[in-house]
Length: 114
Figure 1 (cartoon, rainbow, N blue to C red):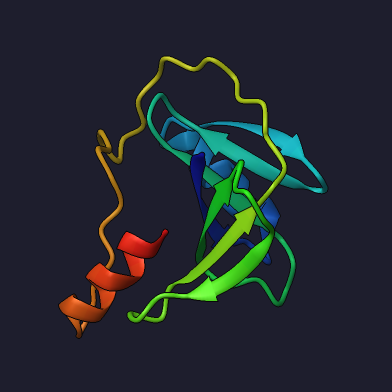
Figure 2 (spheres, rainbow, N blue to C red):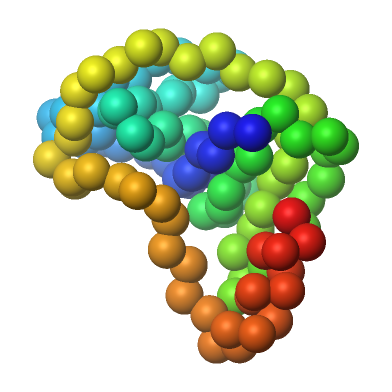
């Protein structure tokens, strides 16, 4: 599976130049944009109803769930092609995604089930 962070971008004309300026390589994808570095992909979603969430591409079934911390998780069956990008952004290197939680035990159980 591939993890992509989804960021609402209702003002795409402002968001896109920002991501490019800090070192992301952005390309159009399904009426939206994927902005990528070597270790992070961000899906800029221009839909006015979009919410910050995590997308898991290559899942066994399509579903949307919410973690105990309130983070939306969208599991998608489709596979996505990525550019082979070897650049880093000004945001730094990424080794994972940190999600804050008020109930560590519930969050641990939730992520173990994934």
